[in-house]
Image 1 (spheres, rainbow, N blue to C red):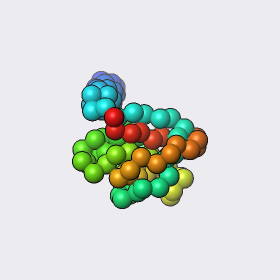
Image 2 (image 1 turned 90 degrees about the horizontal axis):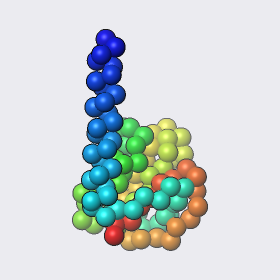
Image 3 (image 1 turned 180 degrees about the horizontal axis):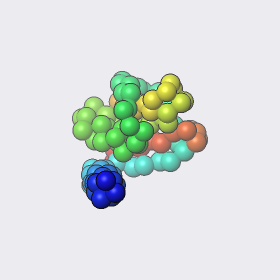
Image 4 (image 1 turned 60 degrees about the vertical axis):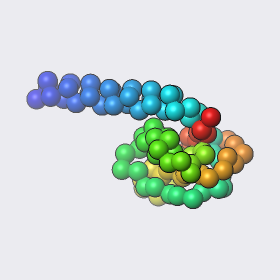
Length: 102
């Protein structure tokens, strides 16, 4: 059982690294502590509180110009991903992570 847990941790780490590389290659910024309010065209409830999931949703959507991820407990019990069809001005917010396609 301990071996399986170690394998699960390694797999999770590999998945996180993969998503981080995908985001970097796609030219998406990551802005910790930044909200970009407005220009929302889609709101997604995330099953896992991982801002990389939100960034990847933006990367995969040609209409997405920017995104904002909100931590669980801010806009409800789950983490949220707000996809944006424009790039709103940044606003400091410790509960958010935003990004812009470059």
